Image (tube, rainbow, N blue to C red; front, side, top):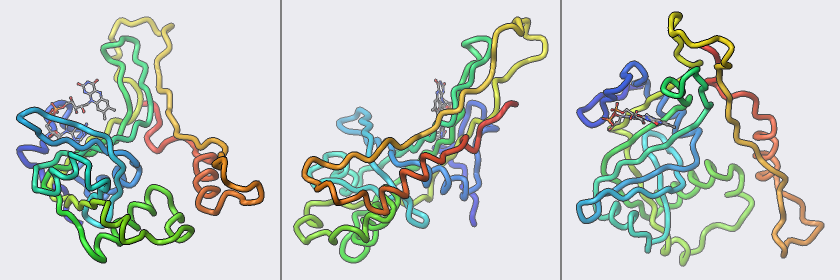
Length: 230
Ligand SMILES: Cc1cc2nc3c(=O)[nH]c(=O)nc-3n(C[C@H](O)[C@H](O)[C@H](O)COP(=O)(O)OP(=O)(O)OC[C@H]3O[C@@H](n4cnc5c(N)ncnc54)[C@H](O)[C@@H]3O)c2cc1C
């Protein structure tokens, strides 16, 4: 697998040792995130919006209404910058200056391509499988009208950066801070609540496998991969 090339746009300058060029790490961050923040420049000023996302092979997929402004501009060739962030922990140092967060974050930039035909349907299935695994097979396929109303974009992962912070607070041995002040890491976890049927779901229609699977997965969520002291 080709490492991520560092370009003038994707070079991390602050704490550059946290930049990761392993493409698998990029895939792992994108696969762990459900929400991206996509930015375009509109009228000379930046505009950032949250949007669901999924990775498919070496591309990031975005979808939405054909009326969505940012997606329309991206489909017409506007340059995009998209980030995905996974927050693993709050890092409590003995000063606020040194306090931090543990995270894995990715930024992808480039020009997206609108998908049509079978590629569009495959991308919608990939999005569905990432956001609600198993749901695609439980519900009817999209109708022609729904497909017409939906814009699906593919952003190649050719220019991307990954930055990772892990471990405990950075503490110099001679920092002069009293050790009576607690320092450490508070891991943050995503949990699922109890599934709540819609008001028009009959009592004897139970949550399907797709819902119970995610519920159980997130209920069993142990500590995040990046937890730790250091
Ligand atoms: C959850 C979270 C909270 C953060 N909070 C703060 C904060 O409060 N203050 C602060 O200064 N920084 C914070 N950061 C780090 C911040 O994202 C930047 O890394 C930092 O501002 C330094 O950027 P830079 O000067 O190196 O890069 P810039 O010159 O700003 O950007 C150059 C390039 O570096 C790459 N890059 C920079 N940062 C990231 C990143 N996080 N992920 C992927 N690619 C990146 C991009 O490709 C970007 O185009 C936070 C990061 C995360 C994920």
